[in-house]
Image (cartoon, rainbow, N blue to C red; front, side, top):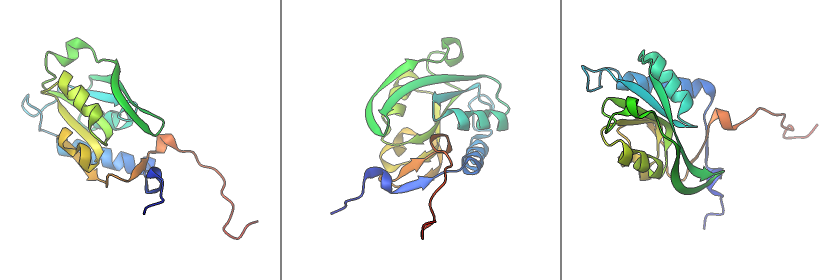
Length: 167
């Protein structure tokens, strides 16, 4: 029997690591857009996709950046995915063709499934992917096990820790 809590198998990501991995994702996406290899815009799934989308937009020199706000977690508990804010319709077109939709992680795939129904021809890219949601993403950099909780740098703070042998 496993007495470990779901988040105890942790994968801690630093700012440097998310930057390197996001740049690697940008390089993988470069010249793969439908318009002569170029992408029309980047849409970040907020909040986790904001930092990777900014880095990817910079690396690929994409100036049109928008967001789609999807709530699918209540702290560390997954809930029903709902869209709180959609991207501008003029950017997305009817089906999202030529658009990069970026998130930090695909976990179960429920968030991307919802967004993919809205924009079926967009290209979905995440920095990290778990097996359950992998089929919902077109491009990713690193796969982690389903039972791993990823700790992103925007979710953590540095603080003092007592030495092992006390003070």
